[in-house]
View 1 (cartoon, rainbow, N blue to C red):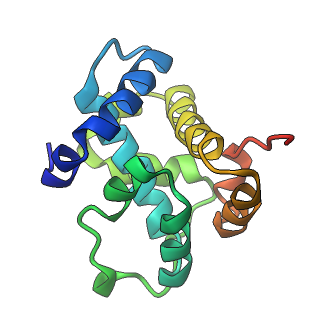
View 2 (cartoon, helix red, strand yellow; view 1 turned 45 degrees about the vertical axis):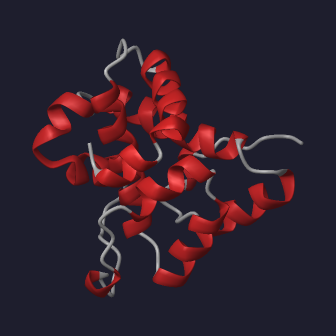
Length: 148
């Protein structure tokens, strides 16, 4: 595991256990870490730097370290990657491990929705709407609206 994840192991571990149970990975915490990292990095890479930093401030604390892990802002693309669907970008970001971590579109969507739900459930009401403003249009279909 990456050093940043190990530094926050006590905070991330319960989250990964919940993620693996929800998606029936039966305690495969390595896969849980990869999936969380892939989804957060894909989201991060769709945002302009100022929006990514604003989103970072709104994320639940355990996710902040994963969000910034290996982030080189000097390499930000001037134009976000083109795709018609966030799930396609997630699978592309997973690279060679996509067949393990995002085996099919249903599993990919479940993982994305679970991670976004977790974020949504761990921000307060005022920040929930603020966070939604930063989500790119490709991500919004997977964001569950909550009635507060």
